Length: 198
Ligand SMILES: [Zn+2]
Image: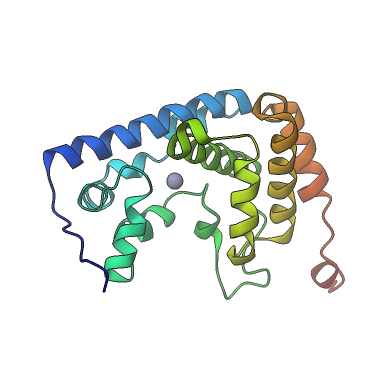
């Protein structure tokens, strides 16, 4: 049987978690500047400093991956995550609504780009020296089948991560290229069932 973890709040975990958030936000800010969405970078993940998100993060802090994972393992759900995804539009889970026609709508440009910066930053920080430019594509391939996401956004993300795996972040993450790809994959995407209705 798996040994039960001892999840308590300590100063070490408090500062460890605070440092993880700050480090992540700095990396996201850097990538958002590159991508031409500095404001999204500045306000990225600010809700992580709210007590409901912050203290759960301290309690389930691990250092190598998200504390939300530990909390879900322990309790079956994470209040921090429910709070976070309800307020942060750069998560496709924010847009998910099973009662709508497409389940997840087309997500506006700036949030999709912030999502890309966020996932790249998380990979780079957690993988450290093991990070390679094809890391995000491999991660995305594993997760995309479970992602309730609009098909156009799915295609766009796959294309961006494929390009990064070949050419690296520098070449792909700039405003000109990203607006071009968003136009191509999202704005020009045809949804036959919906468009043909009228
Ligand atoms: Zn977030």
